[in-house]
Length: 113
Image (cartoon, rainbow, N blue to C red):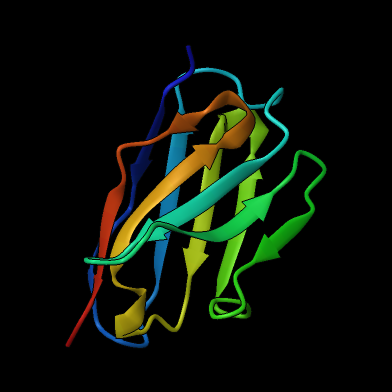
């Protein structure tokens, strides 16, 4: 069973950038759809971005133009580049493979001055 582990979270000032990584314990080349979700305190978990094996991407409207999802199948890693961060981006960020029902444990992102 493949396991997912996120990293790269932390505390950043508004306007700053972070790059999240989600490393898989096995190959992701057979996993078509991979996603990033986030969950802010007191709120439901929400979909942030999706990427297919063919490189097609979709981003939540509120992050489009600021966040970019990507993947490197050779490194078995999913990425989320986050630029121009805002306080409302504060959340625990999770990577997810829906067809395989896989979730990582999450990484905390806090945007605050």
